[in-house]
Image 1 (spheres, one colour):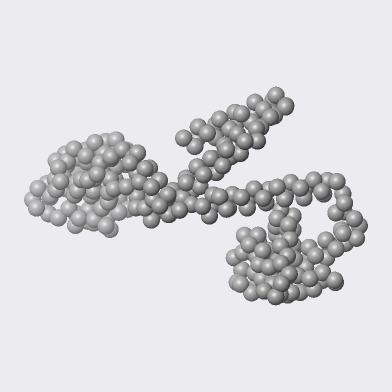
Image 2 (tube, helix red, strand yellow; image 1 turned 180 degrees about the vertical axis):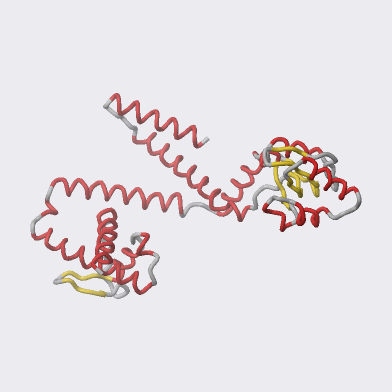
Length: 288
């Protein structure tokens, strides 16, 4: 129980120190607990729940709420004592609060003008633009039978020439783990396989198998080509979150560029200025 309370306290201290308390005193925000003369409102508990330690965040809802409340109570108790000692008047404390206030204003501005400003049509347009940049790549669908010796591979080719089914032979004779699937490799691009295998597979015509064994580091293969096509791009739904991140990144960069232009940035320490400029240059290059 002590460990549980400590985890809750650490999690809530981190949240409240970084974010500041959220107090909305109205009828829609009831008091859920009192610590001495201090009240804890529902909004504070809701806010604390969003910043729980990942370990506590996995708990059932009632236990999670209890952990958040436990941490809040601990914070209220020591915050009251700190107030009595006048720690709120400490200069370092004031500087920290000023920094945290600015950071939270940054976050609120970011949410308003970046996160909440992204429109679905912007994400779709960016997806289309990124897909257009991807060069067309051929991919094939193939099966294979892997054996240890060239003689075994040649015997399998003779069986195929005699009309035996490839998938059935794969299940009977292949040493590859995918033998249960009849040697099915699915679709793959040339760079997905070792060079000797890819070269042989991509030379085949649809429906044909290799007439001679293909040697690789794994053994000897007999390959059947089932299909060839241009690799389809990832579906929009599959990559939408990543594309949205790109749109948000660009909006953020634009916001910062405009703010720097209006306000100006002057770094007086030469070494720090050099490091800052190099870091920003590298970030810009990575963004492109």
